[in-house]
Length: 239
Image (cartoon, rainbow, N blue to C red; front, side, top):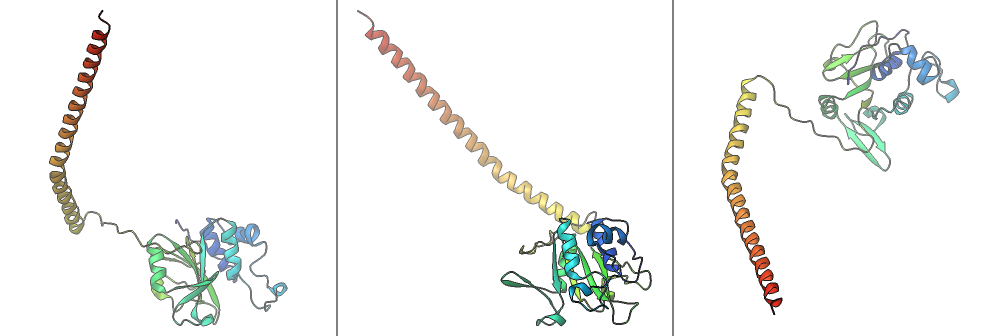
């Protein structure tokens, strides 16, 4: 997934900026206007949530991604769950658990993730960022997270590209290019292929020769049977 950094334009629309990166939109206002239907600075009082809670909530981000047809699977951190040091998300009648290795595996396969992390600019606040591969895209216009290892803790995560109920795929092993190790492995693979060909070639030739002989015998029998039939017909027709 190709990610371009989109910075937030207000104190509260980091979530909209993170969604804009995933949706390939130029500004967080595009997300607020076309997908959220509200300003990120508006409160959620009409939903029974404390007025001070502004920004983009997890369920809103999930809905936006779902409406856009982007596979996504969310995890919440252990402070809201029982399993310490892990994320946990109920999927129908079972529970799926993922740790940091799971996230790293997901990123190594080319996936991306929206993460809720502690804010560097608002004490006690939360902040949305996007990670893809080994890069961190922080929409903040103040202090920014520069690398994954700088994150003091994860609050929530939405794995982009993961489908609900799908088992995680193992990363494909790719050979490094233009290195002594890759050349050694490729030479070994070529040598193994040559050995297999040397073994299979005589067998293939024998099979082909046998098939030719069988065909010749069957053809000979057919010709002989045709000649015999013609002779009997000719004899039967003689007075």
